[in-house]
Image 1 (spheres, rainbow, N blue to C red):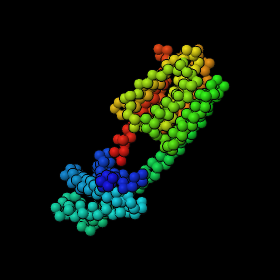
Image 2 (tube, rainbow, N blue to C red):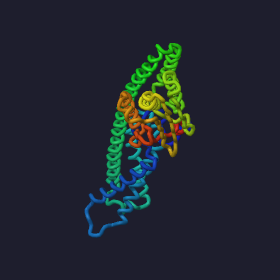
Image 3 (cartoon, rainbow, N blue to C red):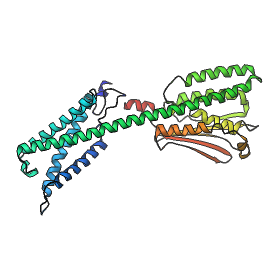
Length: 360
């Protein structure tokens, strides 16, 4: 852990977001180089225009500004873990001071190398004061932008957590009510099995409520789904047949809690319960190139479908909203009917939890 903290760009306090981004990353460096060139153009345009454009002068000014920008980025990236321990205002002031110091150092180097007379027509004192003020203003503007962007990200994350918790809260009561209805149907016909189903439900909810987080592992979600199916098996008996093809999925793959269970419930309500002969519920899962795909299918009969309650549609809509909120716009939940079967397909990009843990 100590070695990881010493790496450039790493914050010393996990979970504490520092407003200054890791400026040594390739994307950040590209943005800084482009902004530096724009600043060079501004500096050139504000000077009096001459009949012939001096390309050598432009190249020297560009080289001078890029030195300052890249050296400042490297210095701030290396000091970022230490700066993250300070108050935001103090850290911002120190960042401005460091950029100004780098600017003065680079100015002194250009003077020592006798490039000052090419790069500018100012006197020595004016040159140092001018460049220091430009560096101070530009660094203050950039740091203010980084700070506002950090605050905006925190607000977005808080709204996202509240939305996910709201969707999660809607699914759990829905799951409880439908499971209790299944148990109620056993009370008169088979009290012993009904009692065992209540015990299974107790274990199921203890496991599902044990973790307050929105994501659990695939192994835990699969165990929750199998406990739910054991309850439904009491009621449906041999009418319910299951076909599992999930062996390729790593147990530590992240999945929103109570995702597979509503898909199975939807398959049982629409595909198994209305049919006297029952049918096969097939669960297929695949994980390739960082994308998790889960398919749950059941027998489909249009006439039976019209007579069946649509009570699980809200749960399916919540699943789609949750995976989109957690995994971005590439996540999707789709429905398809073909060859006499109803397919519900869920897919989203994700990394394994062990890989994420190693990246922290």
